[in-house]
Structures are given as C-alpha cells and as structure tokens.
Image 1: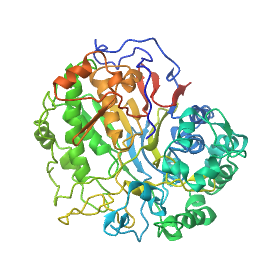
Image 2: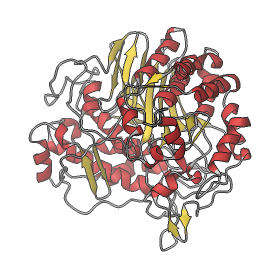
Image 3: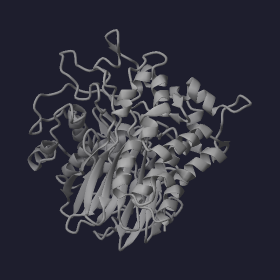
Image 4: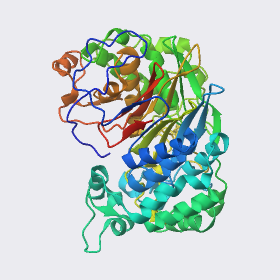
Length: 577
C-alpha cells in the first residue's frame, strides 16, 4: 500500500449522534471544512475531488444515489487508477428510503472456469507475490460495471448512457495527476514498472509523469463511450473482452480465461447482512465472501466489553479493541470464502451464544497466547489456516440522494494498478491473488479460500449502512479501502462514533490499529500523549513510525442534516447541497 505519515488529527465539526455528549477524551483542534461538508439535501463522499464533483452533478440533475455511483466509478477509474478500474470488482449495500430495505450487491470478480487449486503453484511451491500479481493468472472476470448496471436498473432514474459524460470528457481533455497518483506512478511497485504502465506513464520526452502534471487517456474515453452505449456487454463481450482475454494469455504464468468465462459473469444480490447493535442500531453490510460478517462479529464482541466507557485517550479502550480484532481475524481467516463453494458458519458466528463464549477471551491486557479460531455452530469440517496476501489498491464511496436513498460501495482493482497490465485505457485487476496461494496445508487440510473455477475470492471489503433499529431510518454510512485492514479501520470508526461519541471526521482521524495473528500495527504518532506508553504497559507495543493507509468516507445524519467526512490519509472529499 501507499503509506505516508499523517500530519495531524483534526475535527470537522462538533456534532453528536443524539446519543450521550461528546466524550471528554475527544481530541481538540480547529474546525476544518476542507475534507467534509454539511448539507440538507444530498451528499457524496469519494476518494478524489473530481469523482465527488461528478457524483454531485448527477444528484443535482435529479439522479439517484445509484446513478451517482455509476458516474463516480467511471471517474475514479480515470483519476485514481492505482485503486480503481472498470475491470475491477465491488461490494455495495443500498438503502431504499421508501421501503427501508437494505440490499447487498456482489460484483466480485470470478476465476476462470478452468482454474484449479494449483493456480498459483509452481513446482509444488506457491508463486511469489510479485510473480503472481503481474501474471495473467491474477486477473478475474470483471464485475463492478455489471453490478452497477444491475443496481442502476433497479434504483436509477437518469439514462445509463448519460452518466459517463464527465469522465469521458476529462479523459479526452486531460486530468491533473494528484500527489497520491504521482507517488504510485513513481513508486517501487512492480505493477508501476510493467511495459504497459511504463508506456502509459511516460511522456514524449522519456520522463515519467509527476504530480501536478496533466494526462490524457483517449483510449479510456473510447471505452466509456462503449460502456455508455452497451452497458457491461462492452466489457464482458466483444472487442474489449477479447483484448482482456488476449492480454492475460501473454507472458509468464498465463491465464486460461476465455470469452465464455467473460460472457457468463453475473453479479448477485441478496438482503444485506444485518445485526442489532447496542440495542439502538441496525448495522448492515455485505455478505461473504466480503468482510462484512467479520465486522459484525467484531461489533458484537465489543458489546461484551466496557469499551463504551473508555475513550480515545484511554489505553485500556485501545487494548480491548486489539483483543476484539485478534478474535475476529482468527475466525475470519479460517472460515470465510465463497459461500457458493464452502460452508460458512455465518449465522453461528454471529449468534449471541458463540459471541459471548468468544468474548470471554477478551481482557484489558494484550499479554498471553494469540487466540486461535473457535468453532461456531454450523462450522462443519474445519479448514486449514489461510495465509492469503491481501494488498490494498481499493477505494470507497458513499452517496445519499435527495430522496434519502444511500449507496455505500467499496470498489477495487485489487493491488496498486492491479496487475500492471492495460487494455483500452484501463488497468486489469489482479483480484485472483486474493485467493490462498497454497490450497492445502501439509496435512492435506484445504483452505476455505483456495482457487476453484468460477469461484469468487475472499475479500475484506465491508461497506456499512447504519439504521435506527426502531424506525429503520438512516443514521450513518461509511467504508474504507485498506486490504485486510479494512475490517479494523471500519471497526475503529464505528467505535469512535457510537461508543466514544466523536464527530464523524474525528472518528476517521483516530489512529488506525490492526491486530491480526501475532502482529500489532498502528500509528504511534497519532495517539494522545501517554497512550502509547499506557498500551505498552498492558502488553500492546506500538512501533514508532508505523502507518496504516485507510481511506474512510462516510455520512452521518443529525437533526435532518447530512454530515460528510473523508479520511485525511488520502485525497477524498465530501460535498453536498
């Protein structure tokens, strides 16, 4: 991931959530409206100002949250190609304000029909990540555009073809390279050094583009015109699909992807996965193979602690959060995979009895053996431990339209610039590297997340919508990129808002902490004085200089107003009207 030191922790506005008053531990700093916004009608929070503007323009023209999401995705694939692509995948939860229903849409990529558990093995050993990520085998059948077309057909108002104009125009006339993109172009990532990436990012004088300079992408503009006219068929069938297939068949470790695989892709939808939390809230997210069930499990575990009596300046609160995460990841890493291929004990994992049993392992110290996975009701046969590598070339967006409909959507090209291979102006995803490279353990026990034909790889993406449990009305929506740390980032923000009663921006700006297996990772420089030392005394040692690159975006509802916020670690903004 692209990582950088943060400069400060600041607040957007001092708001509450009609819950107890702002905690005494809340950090103090000047009001800052550059990242966030307050509005009464509609709101967009996305990872690039151009994408936010494109979505807001659609909303002002009478479009819905579904319409705006299409325009935002099209723009992000142009201006944030290190994180997004029209060849990528996505998970979305959609709130229908009229029916109060929350629907989960799955646009996750799929493996070719001929893929086997040995997909990322060579000579009996797993491929290195560098070899795998830039190979043709890393690319799955794209799902984001097909998913968006499904959502648009059910919840859109404006014509599909009208939603790509801004991105198409900017691709033709030129867009400004941001600092984040400039760092990725000139960074150490293998995908930035491929032949395709080098050709795209090299100017006529032989030097690479830098932040602040202007790029054009006429090929991408043509692709958007095709998508506008043909929908997802432009990607999954015809010349562009053939270009994708041809490109992934080239080079070392070629794919067996076919046009039939491409044409057969279907996004899915189901009722969102929801739990009642803290009595007052209904928290809804995406279903497996996403990370949504893991996030819900962590939130339910938190109810068995006194973390709500703590605050951001209390070392015990952070230590409890670390304990929650360790338990959550232990189960998640063992059980979660594609439910069409493996039995996932989701109901048992979220059951009150199992949560209470696991919560007994939480203490106020981080001393002791690392927790292993439990066995939730319905788990069936145990899987082997999974050591999947999960990079974080991902982005998140939230949209609330004037009718109160909501999109919370995490979308990804997988790693930085995906596989580093390009066709028709966009990078190809490397989503299949989210599978476990080693399909079995030495004793022959299979991994739940092993590669199989037509299977969707496990993901940590976990878009969130929070409703009032009694009225079914919107309270908040949020989400983040960040690879496997996505679940931790979302958990921190939820605890910050709903347990520590911080403003949304302040909750996003809290230090990130990831406790997975035997490792702790956090941002020592962002804690209040004395907190890091206090955690160390409790057995939780935070290494100075470590950074965690979240990209939270979200909206909170208070007294009829929409409060938007965007993570200071990235370049997004929230804007409304």
